[in-house]
Length: 182
Image (cartoon, rainbow, N blue to C red; front, top):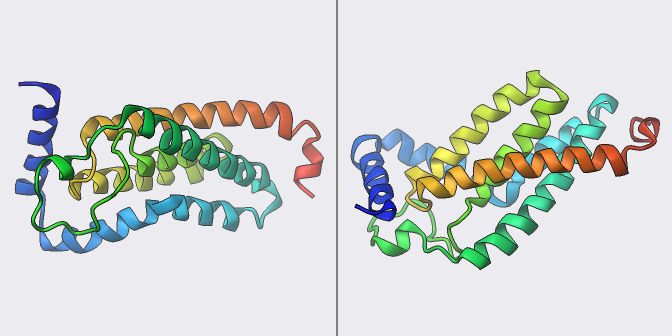
């Protein structure tokens, strides 16, 4: 059995053993929170209202932009991995069939990037953010639009992008730390 066959078995296990009416209603909404990183952009904008979170907010927005550029524009188009729902015909898709490639999961990348940045600046915000990130990532498996390795790759890449964004913004953007908090 090759990796793709194993991953399809994992997705089929989820469809055959986890799928239910409640999740069929909730998972499309959960995944929609990850569309264009909208949930994380909203979080960044809301927390920017408090001066103590402005660095975090700016770093999140920069990280989300970097994630889109690296993950969605560069890596997805370089790897060009077909999605599981393109390989296996799914009769009852709960969301529109995505038109872009599968690896890495952009929803997962943006979610883990944002959660990592939140965790860096405030663990009380970061810990529940990882819960949201995990839910968004799982929704992509549940909806049969990503392979498990797309999710793992997106999570790892999201944390790497977050780390690099934190280091870069601390070094170049926030040299004058008081200017950000005014």
